[in-house]
Image (tube, rainbow, N blue to C red):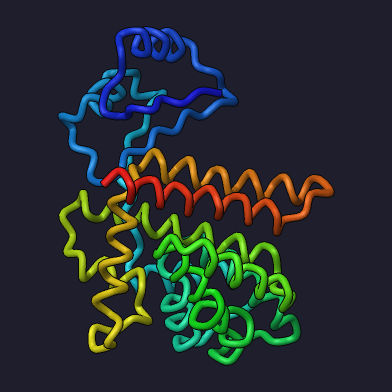
Length: 274
């Protein structure tokens, strides 16, 4: 396994290694190169890979699904479980978790299991399974992460465990916060309006709310604090924590507490540097 930290261009050594590999690529191996934003044909990486044999390389632009596309995608996922959902239920789920397909798939899996005896999933099912976490305690944890407030984060984290919230849901709240930061950075690079970005990632926060300006400022302050590579490493670290707990006798709570201490300490150091 290997990773190229700087995806803006390849060194001559990296180009040689890749060219040698693609002369006789493994039939069981797929190399995936992801570029944030629109990959123009004059981009050094795009130009390099397009020069390789067309039988071995496929270049494809993957666009985020809009609301109608998301609903159709959910219909297909639910059809696999012999279920359907009302339009109101699908729209409410999008409001709660956003447009990230993995997050939606995870929620659909939980909802389908919850509504085991029902074929039609309605908005009440959405509210019972996942809606309460976002605006209530989960929202408080996200708020603590935005502020870099270690005390608040640890108090809310303890509350989540005490109330018996599923461990996967707790990890998801934290991971989704950093995925939102990553999504915002990508959209900023694509010159999207910040208010539009915020409305998409925080649909439950309306401009007329008195605390909207503070939340807007805190969110984009965190977006600017991290590079894409750093956010990728943070998300990967959370995935490792989740995997280690599932494959061992380790307890999740102290691992997440250590993660939060490290994250909030980093915020304090950056404030001092400024």
